[in-house]
Length: 241
Image (cartoon, rainbow, N blue to C red):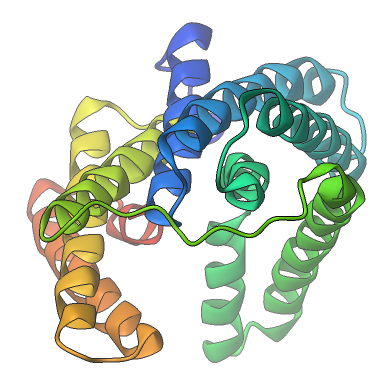
């Protein structure tokens, strides 16, 4: 997938990165001001990452540099526009940089007894996470001291909002992974179902971990069922969703 000719133009990819940042902000309880901040910052991170990656810098230093610049911008925007959820606005824009596919593939490799490559993939992922966490940690002092509760809409509207945001984030990640429109729609469907099921089950009284497990299971079943019949890469779509 990575080595295929790029399907989307740079503008589309930048907008997709912004959509992923805003979607992650919504599902984590950011307020509307944080949505806008996360969109701008995630788009800026993606636009900055491209030129650095083209120069073949060390991947971990590149991700640290772009995450640090993005978190600094997020902290600055949070102060300027007085968002009620500055911590979410700081973290959400960098979440699309987390390498979820290598992490899950590493676990699968170890289960299948390909231990060496599995450990290598997990080690790469952990190093990236350390770089991102360090960038976030260095900019946390910029945030206001106050801690506000997560933003939510009244009643069932919150479930609708979070489910739509899950679909936007998953579809945007599919775009950033060079997927075509049909593949983006499949991933968006999986993201929508996963967040919807998790929200509904959580309302029924289950804890967050169990609700997340059930939501992910339902999303994976639907994505796998549709992807198998259309001969699409179901593992990649399931992970993105």
